[in-house]
Image 1 (cartoon, rainbow, N blue to C red):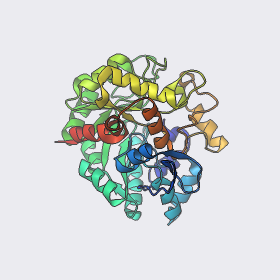
Image 2 (cartoon, rainbow, N blue to C red; image 1 turned 120 degrees about the vertical axis):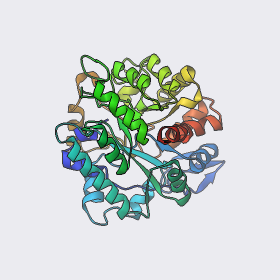
Image 3 (cartoon, rainbow, N blue to C red; image 1 turned 45 degrees about the horizontal axis):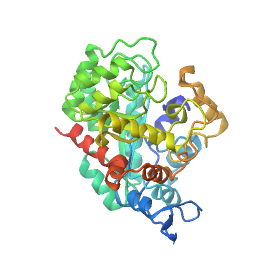
Length: 388
């Protein structure tokens, strides 16, 4: 989901620089159940706690902050991100956040430069909490050192004025780029465009350069033909970092079985999102329906091609101030099908990875398979996409 649609452009860029951290310290309760938060009554099984705490956990579309108020505090106020903020992220169990916003329009190049400058500066200012992710080794180092890994991405590619701009932004830390957001660009077409003509000649050149410099191609918001073209054109794995299965929910932003199978053939991984209208078209909509999408991808491709991309921050959309919440919803076509709530109850909070893990255990997934879903699959794929 495009945070830039929900707030002014300046704040959208500054939001990308908000801070987080990781590791887990959870006191034991009893009977093999553990508290994920010291002051919370929520408890999880020993197996869930160990799986989240001991393994690399990647949210392949995990935003740092949705709330304008958090952005103001963390980014615009010197020293605004402190130990108390760190502890909230620390206990989430998420080690790597792929922080990506949708930036579009005539000023996309300049505004993306500003976004990168702010985010890189913030990571440097709070280096006791952060580590920028430029390699697989950085992921391992972030996990072992107790820092949060920040993977820089953009949910569009309009800032690439030429293939040389791919090199420029890669040198600034961009490791992932969607080819389009929801609308038509000079590269291809988005998921809510009326007609999808596929990837342009310019888009072919951009994909070739992304492959060369080691930048992951992401087609989460692309239209159907543009999505399929990317799989055919890329010589490296192509990801769907945050989407769900159209076979389970007829929504234009979701992916067909054909696309999911072809993604897997590139070596790609699909991150399942917990946005309510992407999970199910009616109520009730629960974490069990999120796992239905994981099951579907596994049946189509095997366990190696599915992960998590929540498409949210730790607190979710429904926690936003009312005015900002309505602005966000108004920025999308009716085909998005927003309902009264955007979040799912079990995943619209900082302990979402624990609830997802409990649901995977209930569904009968083994520990090895859960490790793969929580982060190992995306780690493997990113290594292949970034290799030169």
